[in-house]
Image 1 (spheres, rainbow, N blue to C red):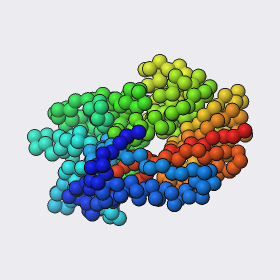
Image 2 (tube, helix red, strand yellow):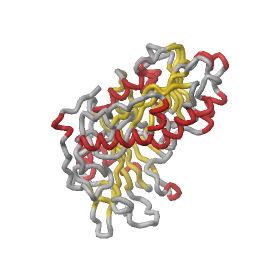
Image 3 (tube, rainbow, N blue to C red):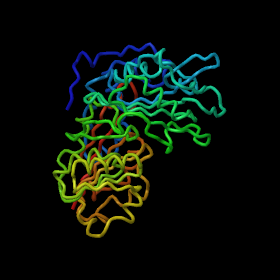
Image 4 (cartoon, rainbow, N blue to C red):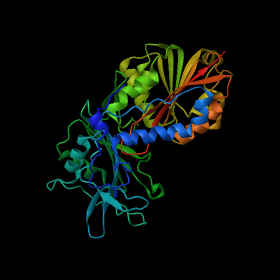
Length: 401
C-alpha cells in the first residue's frame, strides 16, 4: 500500500482560492488531520456493524500525492455582464463562478491545457461563454468543459459542452491549436437539458477517439465520457485491494463502467460478465475486449436489475463465485440487493462492494449482512480525494455455509 512521508502528513496545502472555491472544503487542515477525521467518521458510522462482525477499522489508505493528483476536472465556462471571463467552479450554494487560473489539486496537464485552449490571444474560442448568473437559456455559448487525463500516458480527453456553437467553427478553432494526444468531443446542451454538464448529444470533433490509461496492468483505450477514478497516484493500490485473491469460474462485475476490475482478472476466471447501463462506458469495454482478444470477458449493455432478472441462465447462476459491485452514489436498488445471496447464486463465495458514499453503503450493508449467513470480513477506506471530505470505501463480504 502507498506510503506518505511524515513530512507530507503535516503539510497544509496552500491555495489562494481557499474559502471561495467549494471544491476543497478541507484544504485548511493538515493532511494527517484530514485522514484522522475520515477514519473517525467511518468508525462512528459503522460502529454497530464493525462490533457485530468483530472488525477493527484500519487506517485510511493515504494518497501518495495531495497536490496535482486530480486527473479529472469539470469546470464552468463563464462570461459576465462586462465580458469578464471566469473558468472554475461555483462558489458554495451559489451560481457565482470562481475563476481558478491554477488549481493546486489538478494534474498539471489540465492547468496547462486550459490556458492553451482558452487564453491564447492568437486563437480565441469561436463563441462567447455562458453567463451562469442568468436563469434564462442562452443559445450559441460554451458552458462547461470536462477534462480527463492520465499522467503515465500524457493523453488528454476533453468534452466541450455548449448550447449550439457551430460544429465547423469549433473544429476550425481546434485545428489551429497545438493539440497532441488530445481527444476532443462536444456535448450539445438543449434547453430541456438545463443543469446538465454532459448529455447524450455527444460528437467526436478532433484528435483520437480515445485516450490511453493504465489500470491493473492493462492498457485501456477510453473515450473521455467513460468514468475513471480521478486520483492516478492511488489508483493501482485501490484496484489491487479490490481484486486481490479473486479467482474462480465466473465473476460478475456489476456497475462495471469500462470494466477495469474485470479486465485485470481475466487470467483467474473462466468467464467474466461486465454489466453496465452507461452506453459510452460499455462501448469502450467492448472495444477493449476485442482489441485485447479476451474471449472470456463479456461486456453487457444493461441495467443491473434487468441483467439479474432476465439475462442469466440457471447454469450461469450456479457458476458465479464472486461478485463486485460499484454502484452510483445512491447505492444499490432493492432489486439488485435481493439477488446478492446464495439463494440466487448457490456457489457465491464473496461480494466486494466499492462505495463512494459511506451513508448509502451503511444502509445497503444492513440488508446484505444478516448473520449467520454472511460475514463482513474487510472494510478499508481510501483517501481518493485529499482536501475534501469524500472517502472511497471497499467492503468485502464472505458467504458462509
